[in-house]
Length: 259
Image (cartoon, one colour):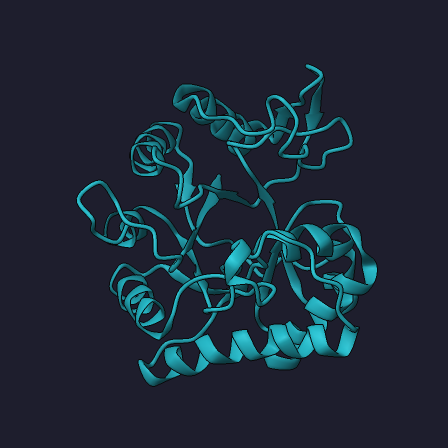
């Protein structure tokens, strides 16, 4: 059994010593989603993340967003489909160019924040995202919520898709992430997050806010880099997965297409 662990990085987050969290996090994961400067990050942070990912054999992914640094890309911005496609493509290409200069290639794309949520629900936004990815490189995998509009659009565009789960987020009964304003939508207890991560990886299920157990397709688990317990969580998960004979491996290398 294998599972991918991904983390959103390059977002200018530092640890308690004032050092970039990437120094400690990247050696513990298998896929790095690197911010492309539109919600966070800059050329220097992208370069740093690329160097660390290459040194640790971690899959490199672009983490595009709406152009909205003031709100950290967490606010929906209405855009024409062609403009949104170009906005996303520009970000992928920006990171791809830096990677190519180092002799590396991108392996996947994961949208950020409001763009991620919008692409999961809105077929037109999902198509804009998949068109941008396919225009850049059809070999790239796309990360997103299972059963979403994005998953359907990815398969229609001929892209491989990695179903993503969030151990630190609450779920509704329909399998979608619960709104952040709801009680239980954000899970901060470390032990609870670890238990959920293991169940997601091993048994492909999750307990919703209502207490119902639902099946959940899972190829990759996201541990948020800005979580103050991220490093402790990753160290514990690595140890538990080893004991459970669950190998940590990049989802993008599976190249899973529509059944």
